[in-house]
Image (cartoon, rainbow, N blue to C red):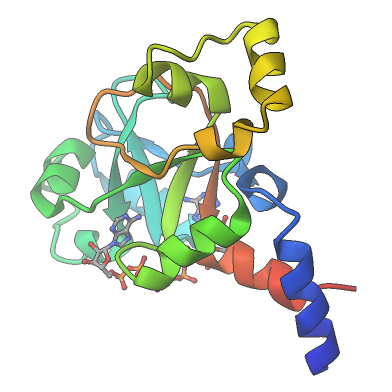
Length: 186
Ligand code: ATP
Ligand code: ATP
């Protein structure tokens, strides 16, 4: 892998947003917090191969509030019939939600700070609507914002998933997705 390739990869990063490299929500392996951690579920988790698993409320896959680490399951007996909710709430892994339009370089800066390396990705306007009553998801407003070159500045920093955000989730992104982008530039 040449230095030139990495330099090109770094330049490519500046043009991309979270949406361009995230894992699509349909491909995200998640669990309902109501799920009982029986032998079958445990097997599904370990077969998934992922170390961090988003946890949603009830049967609403947009309400992802927690994150379960596979390592959190190490001390659980298969016959205890404990729920995902109990384990997730006990371990309290912080989970963040980012705007799909967040520039990759901005998310990389957050990841570099080291507190977290995985985030759920939300459809842009939902997050904006919730955070600032002034933003409406009307095409004209969007047009005005764009023509004023304010759009980039309106992309929100990450928000906490544990709070109530009425968002539409569109994906999941990890540090690995960004580094891959950096190293695989053609
Ligand atoms: P680690 O490498 O730390 O063991 P991992 O393999 O679970 O973790 P990453 O290496 O961070 O996850 O990511 C690898 C790829 O898998 C990335 O494209 C990421 O978006 C995706 N990914 C991570 N977790 C999930 C998940 N729960 N469901 C679907 N895709 C996931
Ligand atoms: P990786 O380096 O494989 O991506 P990670 O940094 O996501 O792993 P750990 O190294 O196991 O995870 O945890 C480091 C700390 O960061 C822990 O305190 C953990 O609770 C926290 N953490 C991990 N993932 C997240 C996340 N998605 N959101 C917020 N905090 C997190």
